[in-house]
Length: 287
Image 1 (cartoon, one colour):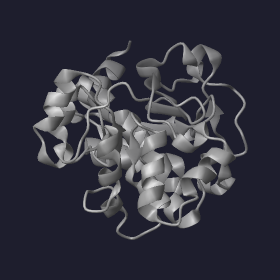
Image 2 (tube, helix red, strand yellow):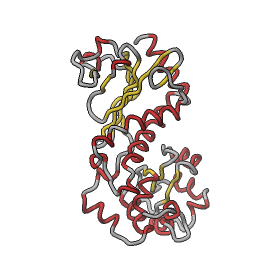
Image 3 (spheres, one colour):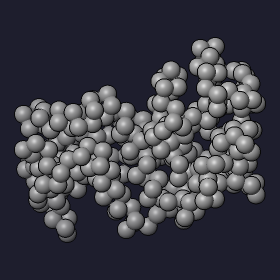
Image 4 (cartoon, helix red, strand yellow):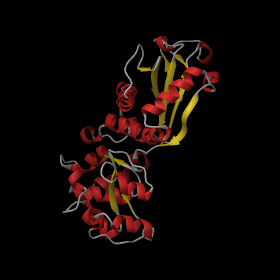
């Protein structure tokens, strides 16, 4: 590994709060960027493959912007200035990356996601001519060659990230969730179907189809009133940090999760939080 890649990697980890924190945040950063682009609440589209090609092209810009906000690196001649290094961010949902002429010879932060497999990759590469193909496309961009892929220094390789829940359903199963006329009942069906999975706020918005969509989750005639007697609570990534730590769960700040405790330790942790304990019944053997 070159000195430049070592330096860039260490500076990224420092900016991200440490390697563990950076790797913890990345999956939710990618999921949020994709969900915001799909924009299900306004478009009623649920999957990335429903977008037009020119819309998908914007995804790389959204990921770059999200990384810049998270890591707080300034712009340089390329996307980021990381210490003395100009770094270009390249994102793909395919199997390769397109490197523009201005990034040749520079460090590239390579990001990739697979929506259908719910996996992600992020790594660093010095985009030297030896790591690139020789035939440019009409925009004069080159691909990372097979030999170049062997030179990628992976920060995370083929790791899981929160799935697009709609990719896991048939049309009939999705229709079952959207069938009720009331937003709260639709949210209840969503949580019953996806207990244990992180769900982004935009998905809640898309299913509730109401401006006050987060109210559909709460008690007082919200989803919690229906779920607590079933032994299911709803965790919030921005409000339940200490409880999530006790339960050893990872949840992004803009995500929620329906969760069924199955141990006495988990039950004790939940009972210490009044908003989760109200009307809650411990049903660890339910599916």
